[in-house]
Amino acid sequence: MANLRYKELKFEGKTYTKKYQIDEILLENGFNWFLDAEIENARIEIMKETLIFNAGIWYNGVWEYGVIRDIDWRAGTFKNGVIYNGIFKRVTVERGIIFNGTFLKGDILFADIRGGEFKDVNISKNVNQTEKTQQPETQIQTQIQGEPTIQTQGKIHGQTGQKIQTQIEEKYNPRVMKYGKFINELFLGGKLNENDNPNLIVVDNGDRYIINKMNLERKLYRFFRENNKIEEGHNNNEILITYEYEASGTNNPKDIADAMEYLENLPGVETVIHRMGFYFEITFDKQVEIK
Image 1 (cartoon, rainbow, N blue to C red):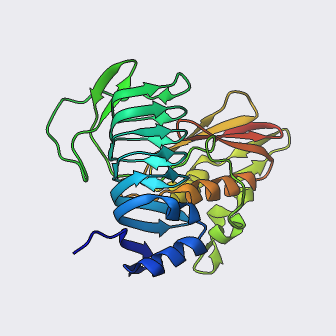
Image 2 (image 1 turned 180 degrees about the vertical axis):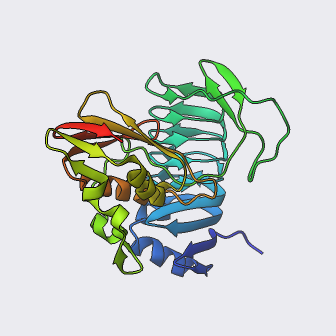
């Protein structure tokens, strides 16, 4: 049987295998750039308005935006998104987050490197490389490939792999649209949960706002479903919120945007910025206190 451009597309609970159907869905959902790529036996899916490449060969082309879980990348440009795994024989990474993968040759221009093995690769000084705690060298098999590594200051450290879902750094992907009012998130079974009331999460105490830490953490759990930490910011008018990935992988750019939408609508909030390192900076119009 001849090799095909697509193996499958998963979209809205259905699996498509016919090329004309897949091309039509990609066009309807704004992924026309993907039709120009030279690919083979690609297994892809669309989840929450994000294109995900699960497996297959990428011969050449320009990857505009999305998630690569695993790939045999021969040549091309990766403009933005998240890379979880794969073998990249010749690639130029313009922006994005790299968690794992083997990069044989190419250039990394702007990115956040959190894992991976880099051989004949030019890494720009603009690239942020986050060092992780060193793990013993083992032959652990991860979901897709072997033990990932991370390069920091010229050294390669072992790092246990973990399947995680999309996170796009707001620095690399400016939010250009909102995803509905946060009030939709406040209803549980048609009733407003009193702990979700914004005025109970941020209480105006006259000269300052009092942040109900427990209620806010509970709310943020719906977006990230892992530990999130709320702490004082760089000044009296600011708080920081850090979060972790969910191992089962449901976080994606819409989660980030929805969380920002919610935070922006809290009483007294002036600005919300999503920073490198998976945390938010929230600035209020007066002093805040966390309780």
